[in-house]
Each structure stands twice: as structure tokens, then as C-alpha cells.
Length: 136
Image (cartoon, rainbow, N blue to C red; front, top):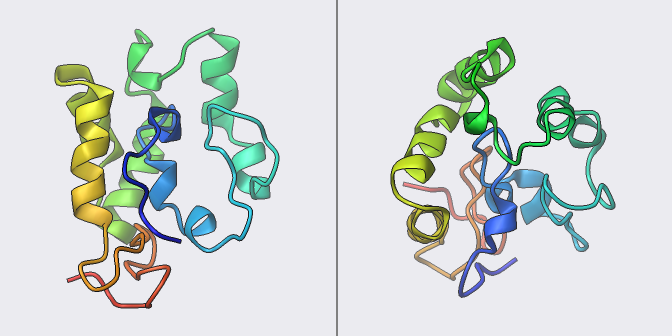
């Protein structure tokens, strides 16, 4: 899958993840529309996400809008993403709070576009969805 000209801001998940660079999104012929949209095409763990359900129950769009942010759910996910993928969902959310979502997605596009072919580099396996080049 090639990186689009502009990443739709609806691809920013409530937890701070950019769904566009999720390995499930990168490698599917019919990828999901992101956490804030329909459950069609989503993997089971995304459909059953407690974070997404919590945000929805509180009528929020993003976790950082909650007075209890960062809660235990976010802290646990953050710990996992720091360890496994060297990424911080809390930093992503703070960037969006301090700047804006469009600017965040512009930065993500730069970071996760394959320099070899213009494909999307998955945050999870750090590999291009098009040419399988590993992220440096």
C-alpha cells in the first residue's frame, strides 16, 4: 500500500496511535477505516478495544480529552508500545494537543513513508508494505 498524499485525520486513534501505519492496515487489501470509524474490516482486538469503548461511553474522541488521562489502560498500552515498537502513544497525543492533528499526520507521513518506493512502513514490524524494505 502506498502512502497517500495526505493521511486522513480520522486515522488517529483515541489512544494516540496512527492507524494508517498499523501492520493490519498496511497489509490488507481492504483495510479498516480507523478506530473512529466503522468496525468493518477491523481485526478482533480492535473491534473489542476497551479504550475505544471507554472513549465512546464518555462521548469523547480522544483519550487525552479525559480528566483521568493517562489512565491505567493507556499506561499499559504505552508501556507495551515503548518496549515493543519504540513508540509513545502519549507523546503522540501530547503533540496533537500542543500542535494539531494535521501537523501530526504530516510528521507521521514523513516518518513512515518508505524512501525506496513510497510505501507505508508499519510501526509494528518496521517494514514497508510494498517492497518489504526495513525501516532504518
